[in-house]
Image (tube, rainbow, N blue to C red; front, side):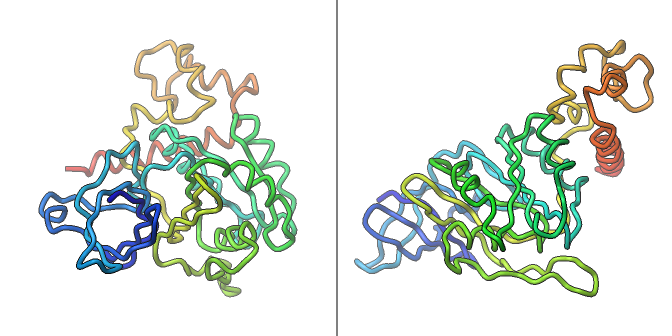
Amino acid sequence: MEGLIIGNISNTYKIKSKQNIYEAYARGKFKNDDITPLVGDGVEFSLLDNSQQAVIENILPRKNSLKRPKVSNIDQILFIVSAKHPKPDLLMLDKQLAYAEFLNIEPVIIINKIDLADCEQIKELYTKVGYKTIITSAKEKIGIGDVKQVLKNKTSVFSGNSGVGKSSIINAIFDTNKTEEGEVSKKNKKGKNTTTDTKLYEIEENTYIADTPGFSSFEITEIETTNLAECFREFKPQIANCEFVGCTHIKEEKCGIKNAIKEGKISQERYENYCKIYEELKDKEKHRW
């Protein structure tokens, strides 16, 4: 039989087939081959003694996969930041966007909690770069229709710092308590992680969303510093204008990207975040061995 992994808690998988939903375990061969089934995987499975329990026999070919959150075969990543409480972390957002570009997965930006603060400046910044940016208030049900529209006929991942409202937005989409909502600590204004496992929810036929554990860091060490500029969408057309091959766009003169900043084609904010991410990756490369 074939099905889709829609949940995973402590290596116990939920598989959805055309007929039913089964609880399943993976064959030992996967562990021996250092392969882990992921939520989003299409799998072949067999039933145990005609029961609702099953064993995963094979994983069908993946078109992509993420290490964190652990999910596969996704069409787009919806990166959520909050307008306030916690304050928008644009450095992390730029890391996430770079990683999406690296994986060749289309990103969408959601700015939530617009009932708490104005976010037009952030929206304008990323819309100018070429990213679809949606403003929402899960609490006030603002923008939820726009989110539903962008999800249609796709498998999507919601990602972002804890406390930004991932669970609240998913609950608003379904108009029910699909996930446990988190609270933001009044003491430090940082989100408290409430989602502890990855789940795939079916909104309608061929439309799925993944709710994943919140996290406060985002590692993109798979990207080499030499390729980082190509992961900034608005940088790519300007790289050819650099005088030196292998320009890092940091210290060099006659740099196409630096000239584009002066001409207003690239924002200073995005460039500064590029520099921070570059130095972070460079440091990790030095200590890799």
